[in-house]
Amino acid sequence: MKIVSKNFGIKNNHQIDVAIKNGIYSSLNIVFKKEPKEIVEEVDLSGLRGKGGGGGATGRKWKMLKGEKKVYLCVNADESEPGTCKDRQILEKDPHLLIEGIILSSYAIGANESYIYIRGEYTTQAKILQQAINESYQKGFLGKNIQNSNFNLELTLHRGAGAYICGEKSALLESIEGKRGHPRLKPKRPEPDYLFGEDAIVNNVETIATVPFIIKNGYQAYREFGTACSPGTLLFAISGHINNAGVYEVPFAYPMKKYIEEFGGGVWKNRKLKAVIPGGSSTKILKAEDIEDLKLDYDSMREAGTSLGTGGMIVIDESTCMVKTLKNLLKFYHEESCGQCTPCREGSGWAYKLVKKIYEDNGKLKDLELLKDNSFIMNGKTICVFGVAVADVIDGFLSKFEDEFIEYIRKNNVS
Ligand SMILES: Cc1cc2nc3c(=O)[nH]c(=O)nc-3n(C[C@H](O)[C@H](O)[C@H](O)COP(=O)(O)O)c2cc1C
Image 1 (cartoon, rainbow, N blue to C red):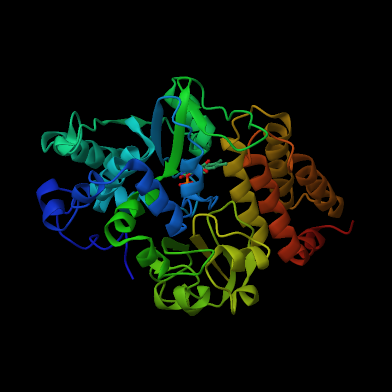
Image 2: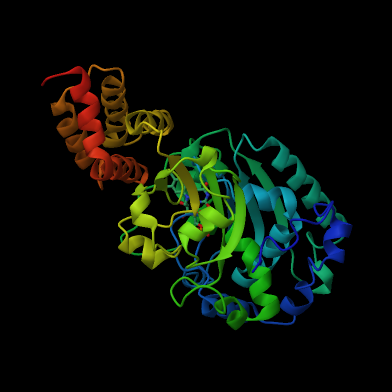
């Protein structure tokens, strides 16, 4: 079943005339006849969960707005995590679907100004998107009094400068404000985010691109797929040691093994599967045997001791050295820590140095204890969950592959 990828195969679908011919923007007629709160209710009833990694309920987030302040919708197209490459498909292949989703969502939450924050490295996607935005203005889908509805919407594409941390929603908002992309302290109780002193909603590209389907077909149609707690579909990505790396939309609760075999075409070079990092590099690694009966939904992944994340699976074959894999991942996190919190700034550096030392055959067994201590110190003691993610990556590798680390160290050492 395809919801957001339905038109991906259509030639020149990024051009507005082709997109309109294929049904994009047709939900505007429906939406402007309804009250904004009816749209919020429909999205809430659909159970739509945020597709940027956290899986928070979109409707509940929108309902936190009190209507007392101006509201901004900020669409998160930062997509910088290794293994996560799904939103770029929407940006390239159906940018008008995203814009349609932005119009509907902005109308629902009462936003007259919206931003798309796109990662700096997505130069091609930024060009395609800016062209699509320009076309949408020309056709009168953006701007003043859209389709005689009295609804105005200005949409700005904001390009990042290449920092992974700017995908974290509060760092993203700081960055739009022209400041350094440092995450903000979180409030005690859930409340709307803020931008320029007004309310802001941050949602992922795919989350927003799903809204037109819900509005056109009703919340029940969305709930026909997936499970009660993980309704609908997700653009799951697969990369690494796999025959058909790519992005394929399937309903939640699809069996992971079947996905790897059917869509991914199985592990490359006729090798055996060793492990899978299931939902972008920040999710805890699983062994081949862990995925035998595993389903791709939030609850099943939590029960398996990991998380669904963005659904970007990294497949690892039997020939892979786990010490080297962890070293490479930690190099990324060390370079991308924003440096604001000491446990994350220092901890990610120390973790990288320790695993590099082991990889370069200078490791001692006690380094593994140091590594565990280091992730304990990082975990839960920082402003954002970047530090938690690094600790989870380390803990995941050590809980599943500690034997391999020990053997690697023993090969060259007797301590
Ligand atoms: C380090 C870090 C990077 C993140 N990167 C992204 C990203 O690139 N895209 C995204 O949508 N969410 C990202 N998130 C999650 C966002 O903070 C936020 O939860 C999300 O954009 C909310 O949208 P959603 O509810 O539609 O998922 C990141 C979080 C962290 C901690």
